[in-house]
Image (cartoon, rainbow, N blue to C red; front, top):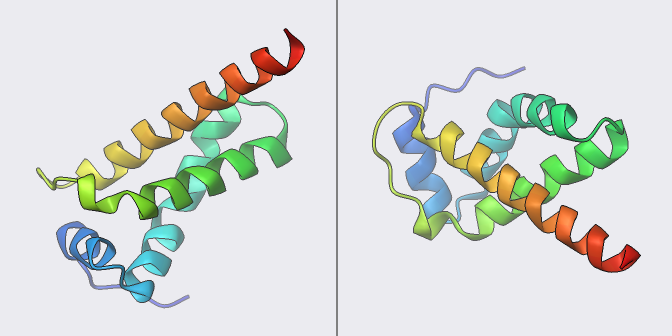
Amino acid sequence: MRKSFLTEQELALGCVRNDRDAQGELYARYSSRLYAICLRYIEDRKEARDLMHDSMIKAMDNFKSFRYVSEGSVYAWLICTSRLQLVYLFFVTLEHYA
């Protein structure tokens, strides 16, 4: 495993610029923590992994709307994105069964 020396702010700037290396680093750095959060809400491991992956893609697609505030703001933003994906999944599921 390679060690990244990018600060969170540098990582965010790279993602805003659609830098594939920065996006890969973002995924490597935060995907396991986001997966653990998704697993709290969705007990099915496959569904939780899909939610985490969809959330990361959504975040990378929308990074231009991200504003760096301080250390930890990228992670907080990713958590928020994951929760929004969870709500979307919940409503899609409800519509399917309605």
